[in-house]
Length: 192
Image 1 (cartoon, rainbow, N blue to C red):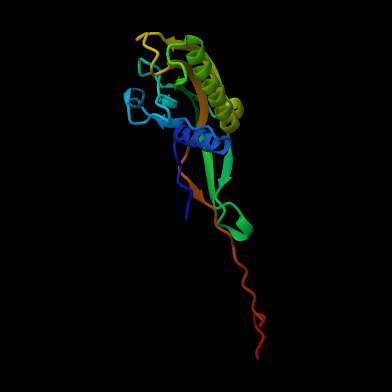
Image 2 (cartoon, rainbow, N blue to C red; image 1 turned 135 degrees about the vertical axis):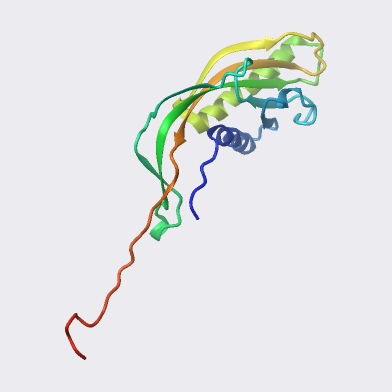
């Protein structure tokens, strides 16, 4: 079965969720433009979520630049001995503009701003670790801003950070074919 090319951003978000699961971080992880205003995607204790927004606030999604690692890449493991079965060629690298919304709350003292700041920054640091674990040097953090209104602290605090995530845009997959040998016991022209 040939490899299906998937979104680099969807893969990043799945990688962050897997990291959180392995690390015991209970925050919900979501992707999309509508997710920051949703109430049903909160983690335990309300708030406690990380949302990846696929563009900057104006809708700009970044830029395409020359492929960072040109040439064929092999994917899949269905060939002989687990060999790759699909060859992909990176056409461009998408330097994707993403906004990461981190919203956390310390429910032990909702009116204490220090505790809300601490809870949010702790979840943000865990998010940075998770993104780095998946994307390594292909993720570059930028400006960070706090959401300062409304001033009610019952549901914690939110900060938003810009992230540039670089990932390849691929050409159509090419299937790799493995020859099989055919041995005959009779040589050409031999009778018998």
